[in-house]
Amino acid sequence: MINISVDTSEAEKYLVDMEDSLINDLIPYIIQTLAVMVATNAKDYTVPVRTGRLQESIRVERKGKNNFDVVAGGIEIRGVLVNYAYYVEYGTRHFVGRFYMHTALNDIMVNFDSIVEAIKRGERIGEESGGEVNIVQ
Image (cartoon, rainbow, N blue to C red; front, side, top):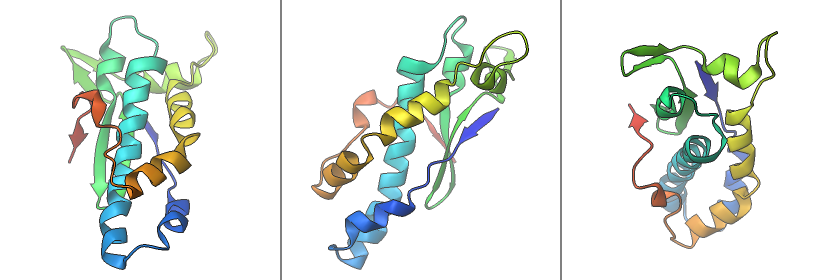
């Protein structure tokens, strides 16, 4: 299993001109949106696909109000335990890592500023995936 964490400590600098009640509502939404966008990007564009099980195992796990993990592997998909996510990400002595989770994270974080600004304007970001990424409690 592989977890990718997003450091959003810089998000607060974008919210300094907003009321505290709005900030308390927006920060969890920003973090959740970023996590869903990373998972969607990994599923749709960066994960290598042979059987589709690794792709299906990518999900967002909620660990607390402001804590979401993007996770791949560690669950059973169609009767098979997907326990190779780490090896596909980082590689082994037999093959080079694909870095699909880190690539997905980097692709989204490049646009961090514009994502936060759009959320501040009231736009709903990252919902075009049609709910394909589940948030597990």
